[in-house]
Image (cartoon, rainbow, N blue to C red; front, side, top):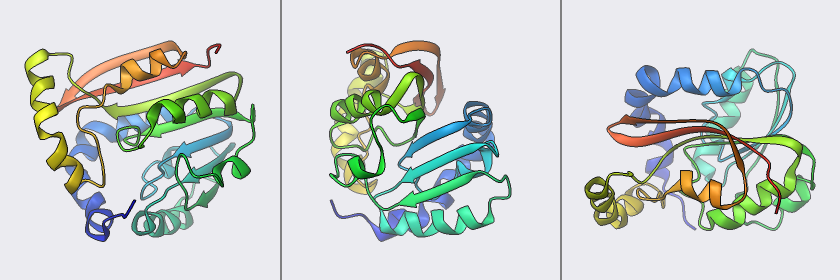
Length: 207
């Protein structure tokens, strides 16, 4: 996949209207208490880094060369003491299996990324394999609306949206996909910020 330089470099500016009033406090609530070994999938520009606990050991992956440059800079600016290692790679890349071992993670963190992963079902299977028993999947995503008419509108807009937003699938039912992958819900919340959004904590299930 070819990543857009324009989208990568302007992402933070475009997202600030959602982040400060609506999403930042949710990121903090989801991430601040996490300790141990963490895989952050789609680290993007590093917007989550400030929220991690000092005892967090984070492995961040991000395939966009334009976003990971900003993530590296943000990593250097983070003053919370968390250990953060970054790799320019994405879900489905063979090298990822050399970076993350089976049953080695306490948490997998996905914030605004499962909408973009080409094969989310395969990614979720990998997350389950990589999590330790008792590990958790932490999610903050926009999703396909449960309201029939809004969901249909998202279906119609999806192709154009994907071209503009580096392959983002506007109508992906991520909340349902996670349940179908065998994870067990611990806490869930649905909310709207223009688009329908979903916040969830899921326990590793049994395959």
